[in-house]
Every structure is written in structure tokens, then in C-alpha cells.
Image (cartoon, rainbow, N blue to C red; front, side, top):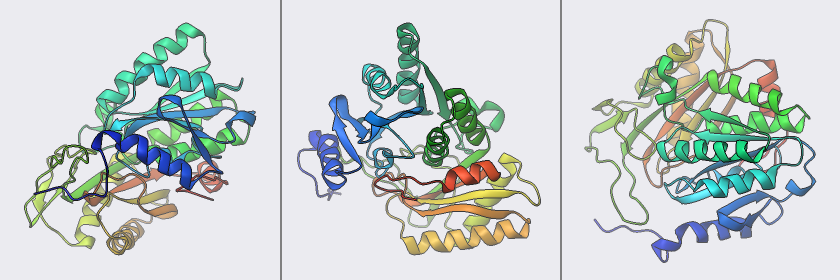
Length: 332
């Protein structure tokens, strides 16, 4: 089947989308060398700053969350590909305003290779940076093997929590500890009913039958071992809620953040119906949702499905989540 997308030369996808992002948000961010998307107010930042990285093709993630209260520099790789380590080292140098840099990396092979090489160089240069890895996909490894878990939408609320902690003037060690505590108490499970196509090649990333869905689908069409007949919103939400609650160990009376993140081709109507079902399922367990988001944060082109994210919350994390931020795709 021929790919139908409103694009120009496939080789220019990343540069053109970044130019468009900058044109659409001239008061919030600007473009730097090596595909850096930079918080326009970075120059006056007298605080810990936040650098992250990731491939394009997942918009609005990650570059859409650059701005005050979240990410200071995002280094963007090509479609579904990690950037090189030198660009990330340069971004950390640029971001450091004397208070240190929190460097957040999603757990994918290419990103981790870049992240590890970046930190080796950062240490050689004597830069003050701490790396935090988001790795919350419950489908491809048990919690005791968290290093094998993929990073999914959980990076976005981690940026928000860490960015708010930095804005409060906390030290790098404090900001990193808060980000790590949040990351250690979060989990995501994805479901897909139709795969995406790679926007440069037209390759289908996942092939599902008309009456099939897959719980545990990875960010780039990786199989999760949960292929099954299509189920209703309530049935799907119950399966996913129960898996996430069990994984994190959420107990009666606890409070959580709940995010339904559309993967690109699932309507807001469907996402809200799933959210409704998830809240009701949690209420049966006397678990209260105190923070939420329903919509698209991290997509996979036109993949149909969603990611359900859950995190244990406390008063400090809730305050940080609700703190002001100004980015293209999240404002508080």
C-alpha cells in the first residue's frame, strides 16, 4: 500500500519539522546546531538545567516539551534514531549554568549507547551532570530486571517533575533524587490495534489482523507477546490497570497519576472512554487518581492504540506536577 503523508523529501523530515516547531513557538524555543531544540530562556537560567535526547517521529515528544519548567535542551536524532554523543555532550556544556545538568535518557538501545558514551565524555571534561534513565514498560521485563525495560511515555511526566524541582532552586542531587524516585514508582503498558509506517521508507512497523490487538506493543512496533482478539474499552482498561497496579505495588488508599497517551491514530473519544474505565477500575480498589493527562504526548506516527501510564504520587510529586510550565504541548 502506498504511503500517504504530507511530506517533502524524506531525508529532510527532521530538519523541516524542527523548523516548523520553532516557527510555531518563537517565544518559547529556538533551534541550535546539531538539531538542538533550546529553551529560549536558557541563557538566564540560574538553576539546575535539564537535557534529554531522542529520535524524531514521536511528536509532540520530545522536542514539544522544551521550555520553562520542563526541558532546557532536547537533542533530536533522525526518525526513530538516537542522536550522536558529541551533540549531547555539547548540549550539556551549553545547558550548564553553574548549578549542574540533569540528563534524562529513555531506555532504548541506541539512546543508551549515546547516553553512556556521553556520560563518559562528560566525566572526562569534569562537567557536573547526573543521568537518570526512564525504563517503565512492564511488558518486556519484570521489575527486578528494570534495566531491560523500554522507556515509553513516562519520560514526559519525569521531565515535568524534574523541571519543577529545578525551578524551585533545588540542587542537582536533589533534583536527580526526585526524578529517580518518580521513575522508580511508575509503569506503562501499551496496546496497539494497527501499526504505523516509517515516514521515510513506508515500512509497516507492525502487522495486526482486523480483529486483533496487542497489549505490550513497543514504541517502534516491537511485539510484546500480548496478541489477542479485540476487546472493548472497559475490558482492555481493566487488563491494563490490573497489570500496572500489580507491577508498582499500589495498595488500597494510595494515590496515583494516570495518563492515557494516544499513539497517533486513536481518537480522543476513545482515549476518554478508556480513561473513564480506568478511573472506575481504580476506584474499585480504593485508589484515587490525583493527577492525569488524556491526549497525545508521545506518538508513533499513525499507530492506532494508546499507552496507559501510572505512577505512585505523594504531596511533593503532586505539587511539582501542578507547578507552572510553558512548553508548546504542555502548559500549566
